[in-house]
Length: 215
Image (cartoon, rainbow, N blue to C red; front, side):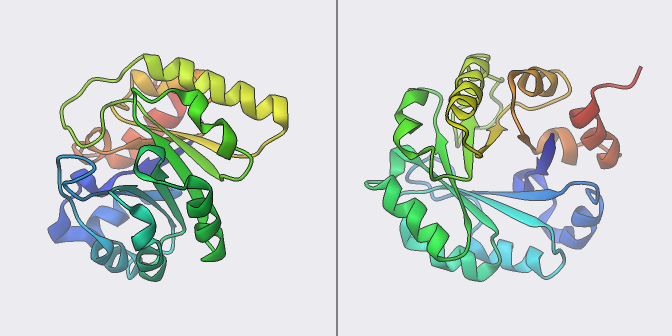
């Protein structure tokens, strides 16, 4: 399972050291919030561009924004490898997926907890990644929603039945207890912020997410 540390809880004043502290992570995750699609406001493409100056790892950008397609080219220019946008925020998800591919990026679709997972079905043959939110996006301090496990299982089954290749990513409340649950359900990628960056030994935190707690 791939672990994608989220910079939402990283120390923005010591980015190079923060990146070095998660050196075993294959991906780096950027949660972009605009204060409109979700209540919170975070960073923008400038952080992605800055971190790209320190790292050649896979940059996974999650846009929790209204009209996400308008900023695809900006994030591509900043160094994103993949952009995931919300099904709920797009008037034409198929066109958004096509635009990302035209920009040379991997395309992902995300859904909020209340959105029926079946609404993704028309787009799953074309996406590279599906992001299942296991908390309500844009609100801190939430617990993992166990309903996400059924959504992961549905996506695993749909993928297998149709021979598709999208990755399944899970974001929200991921820690040493919930990571094994989503791994067993079939998730390929987990996003974790505070569980990693609030630990002194970030490499041990990443290993725990991948392999479970040491005996």
